[in-house]
View (cartoon, rainbow, N blue to C red):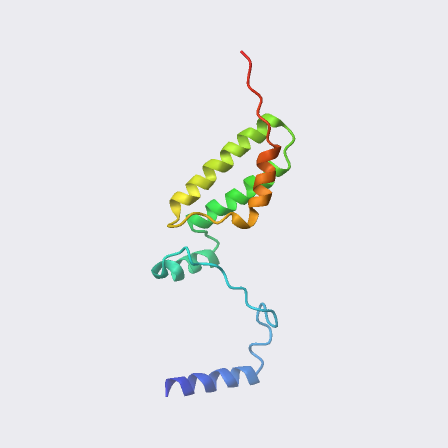
Length: 125
């Protein structure tokens, strides 16, 4: 009975055009990979995300991508080395926050190219 009432209300709202100006209308839904979030926390994380807050795991992943972008555009060898150390620390931190390691396989070629560009000179003195 409840489903019939709900369906009728939805149909009436559609006929009045109340769904015509919804954000994202006509575009495909974008599903997020929340498989790393425990099922009992998914709804809470989604509410926090919609309010502008990120869970620690996603914040760590965002920091990793920012560090990778910065590293890719650095010319100074010493700064690249410092940034690479920071990137390794961020990845370690992200892996500790998750129940499974962060998946960087999709960007491994990119990451390997960055690492190959970093040349380390031994300091004298």
